[in-house]
Image (cartoon, rainbow, N blue to C red; front, side, top):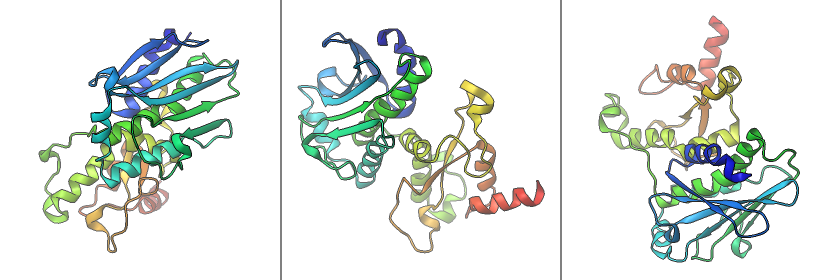
Length: 277
């Protein structure tokens, strides 16, 4: 049954991880499953998530590494503090439902785990699913279990969004080009977007519009806004992707950035809407 849904699953996971994904059928075990790994790495060198039906109404997703993934793991262990922070937040975001359980190798904490060696594993299980092979149920299951696991690994491995120099704009001279580039990178990182929507939901945090309710499949247009740009903070504090990034619709996001170098605050835009609406 899962094999018939390959394209559906592949599209969902690719969009959330920002990486090209390989998908293979796994016929081992009582019920066949699917194995998803990074396309630009050999299967034996890549982290991989196996999604498999469990029981009559559940799925289990298991993250593990290939037998020859030592070089990949060494590269991932060199990830920056910010990359590690985002990877941990993505894994922690899985367990937000009583029907989901998460286990990390060595009984490590969801919020402070470390990638140790090739024996590192994460297992997440979702239970109580009715009609588990329906498209919407399967997409939601991948979104809850598979995508955050592979997204966390993609962040540690270093799949970076590209921010062109010419995109920085003239305000860079006022705010500092390095800081602006970092802000744009955060806002355009698909893993940040994934975490942002998992935490805040699929509605704009200013106008409360849910594009998917209006446009259906074409409604994946919410953007990520960095609420406290580094160079603009009176008292710089430690960046936290769980609180410093919010989803905005394209209209509200453009409205926020109509003031430069200091963008409008979301609450200021909301006040303008109430005044002129």
